[in-house]
Image 1 (tube, helix red, strand yellow):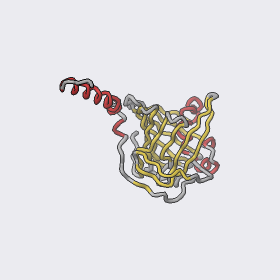
Image 2 (image 1 turned 60 degrees about the vertical axis):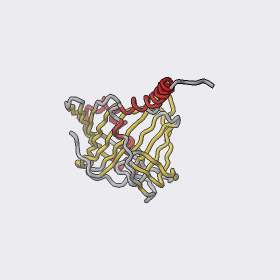
Image 3 (image 1 turned 180 degrees about the vertical axis):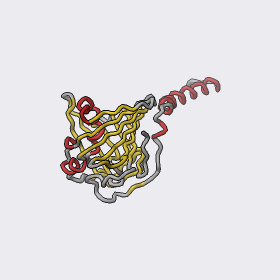
Image 4 (image 1 turned 90 degrees about the horizontal axis):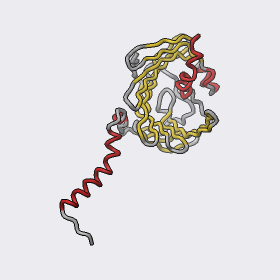
Length: 235
């Protein structure tokens, strides 16, 4: 049996402890770590989710994305208001470096798109983009062709209409524990690659109802961090 002095034993223990804690410390230093706080709230199964409840001013949800276990971004989506036959939606995003940007979109045809479950029926009346310095760039409907790919990623996940309920069971995310979720599997082709994703929805969540989404390989996970009904614009 190998004998160690007390000093040597302590040094070995300290190194082992440091090795275990180092990854956690690195994660905790991320400017995004503070958003992953467990709320401890519970939400019952309630009504089977098929599509979101009607939009109303102030509804919002906050999601966080991790890639390979590392914090990637945090994003808040807010229903700012109604204008004519369209809705003003605001998206505030913080990246892994702590850089914050914001955008507002005037979405027309949302209700028709929701009914048909086809986000392509949505058209954009205008878009505003706010950078980290606070400068705002406004893009008119005539100019939107150049920004459609950016805008599409912002609004396509808002059009959710699931014809079939598949019990996804209980899902635990920082925003709380959600029972009776609806599990929906998607398959999307991007640049010749097929990306498969599992998504869980619950009727308690406003705007789009999503609680969690996860790529089939488990490398990319987006979780609900918070939601509410009294959000304010940051523009």
